[in-house]
Each structure stands twice: as C-alpha cells, then as structure tokens.
Image 1 (tube, one colour):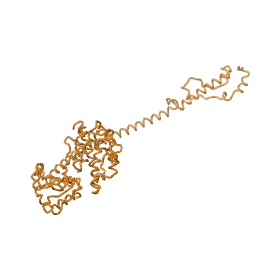
Image 2: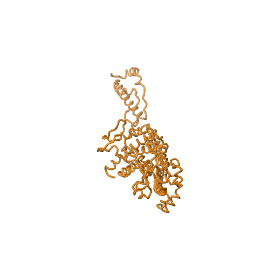
Image 3: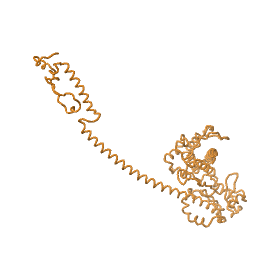
Image 4: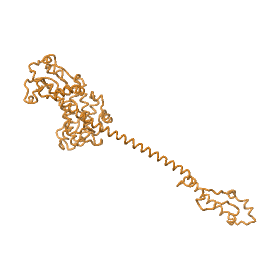
Length: 455
C-alpha cells in the first residue's frame, strides 16, 4: 500500500497502538548487536516508503530476537552482561568456600596423621604384650611339667633342679591365678584310708594333674620305668588309669578305696594332661597366636590330637589367613558362632566359662559339618556323615586355612567339650560319645588334608 503526504494524518490515526508507541533504548543491548533500536516515528514510516506490511514483519522479527535474548538472560550460558556483578559475587563466595574446604581438609589430614601415629604406637605396644604373653605361656607350660613331676612324690624331687624349685616356689602364687581350671571346684580326694598313708594318692581333674582311678597290676612296665618310675596302669573294663607313686606299695590300697576312687571319677577323663606346646615356628603374634591359646583346653587326648593336626595344617600355609570369602561356607553354621565372628572373635563369657552343649547347638554343629563335606561323602537319616574307608579325590570344601577356616570348627568343638562338664551323669555318657564321634570324624578328614601335600 502506497502512502502520500496528503493522507499521512489519516494513516497515522488508523495505525495500531503498538506501532505508535516508542521502545526505549536499553543499555543491555548496546554491546550485543548492531541493530537500530531508535524510536518508531513518522519519518521511519516515510523512509520505508509507507510499506505498512513490511514494517510489521520487521517488528515481529525483532520481537522474536528480543524474546530469545530474554531467554538467554534468564538462563545465561556465560554469566555475563548485566549479571556480571552477581557472577563476581558468586565467584568470590566460591573462592571463600574452596579456601574453607582446603582448610578443613588440612585439619582432617593433621588429625588422621596424629591418629595413625597413635595406632602405630599402640600396635608396637600390642606386639610387645604378645611377646610377653607368649613368654608367660611358655613359662607356664614349663612349670606345669615341673609340677607334674613334683606331684609324683618325694622320690621324684631329684628330677627338679634347684633353679626350677626356686622358680616354682616364687611363681606358685601367680600360677594359681593363671590356671584355667579351678582345682578347688574339680578336685576329688580319695577316702580317709588313703589319706592316712601320707596323702600320696589324690585325684584332681585340673589342667596339670591326672585323675587317680583303679589299679589292676602292681608291677610297673618297662615303659613306665622309663618315664621316671611313675607307673600308670589301665583298667580294661573302664578304660581309666591311675597314677601311683612308687613310694606307696600297691598292697596298702584297700579294695574299698579302689572302688571309691573308681566311682568318684567315672565320669571324668583319667589320663595325664598332655598339653599341646605352641609350635616353635609359630608367629609371635597375630591371629594364629591368639587362636592357639584360645583353643588350648583340657578336653582329652582326642581333642589334643585334633589341635596338633590343625597346627600342621596351618603350617602348610605359613600360618597365614586369606580373605574371609576363602573360608568355610558359613551357611547353616551355628548361631552362636556367627555372633562370635561378628564380634571380631571376642570372648563370649558364658560360652567360654561353661561351654555350650544344648541340643540346638549340637544339631546346628552336626548340620554345618555335614554341609561342609565333599560330594563323595554320604549322610545318614539324621543328617550326619557316614563312616567310610577310602577317601575321594576332592577335599576342596574343607581345605580352608586361616581364621575363617578350620578354626571356626575347632572353636565349636571346644565349646561343646566344655559344655559336657555341666551335664548330669545320665546325659553325659551319650552326649560325650556323640562329641567323640565328631572329633574322630574331623580328625580323619584333617589328617587327610595334612597328608595331601605333606606337613
């Protein structure tokens, strides 16, 4: 549409309001583009040759650009323009926060270094305590051997050197505190008839003495004489033994005394205590050192044989312990064992003092032992592994070293064995037999593992 000067007023009156108003020059666009943001006036329309439609298109295009610019300002990609002041403040605040973070990290490093220094010192102290503890354990075992000879009678004092006697007398008060079994609670003295002979025949169920029982033979064997003239005799009917000092003639012991001794100690183990010595090549500290002394218990020769095999088994791996995932399968393991392991193998006072022989624990232990067997072993209707003659080739399920290996099984065996002493006479016979069956089965399997690659 063409517009002449005579009709300009008419066109201006008919112009839409949005074309009449002016748009201010904004400082925010002054440095952003080179387009003209001047006022829309009558002269501009004339310069455009009065092309009304072209002017609307220009305005629409400019509006689109303005909207795009507003969007950029609302979500600035580079945070510049009028937001520069705010950006600078944010950057300054960011620098302050980064400085604070660096300061806190330095403080944390300082604290950690101090804590690690304390850990190193504590570790050195622990190593020293371990060495002292091992020396004390060695001394205890030496004194136990001396005491066993000393209790044999006056005629055996010749086997005790003067130094050993002095050490024994000096260490007696401390040794009484270190004994793991109370001799007062477990001792049984023979009848007054024996006491009148000089109290030479006293029976005690302790960690360093044997139980006096029955006598069927008056003459010691040659092997008895080689052991220092201390005679040990065995009653085939009861499978129990008696220690007799040579200074007491066997004729002086009456039949009633023999029967009383047999009845008093029928439910106790009656052989000499054979303590398992700590291996000379064992570590001075660490998991094996703690485990060995934790497993050490007066539970009979069968248990001691199992412990010796375990020592030989761990020696094959250099007394090292692998990752816990390389240990025995924990599925179906006894609940109390899981608690013991979660507590980082700390002592459970009730279990350690009185043992554990409840039917639930026994059933859980047998079930766990059955699940650990190789595939070539079969189980009976009760879920217990059946006896066998020939070993299979695969022993991998039981070939587990370290604190997550056979140690867990032996801990359960120890708890069960200690718990047998709390049972009544009528219960103890059958449960003890079941315990011995498990010990024998474990001994057989562990012996095969030791023999596979040599000791």
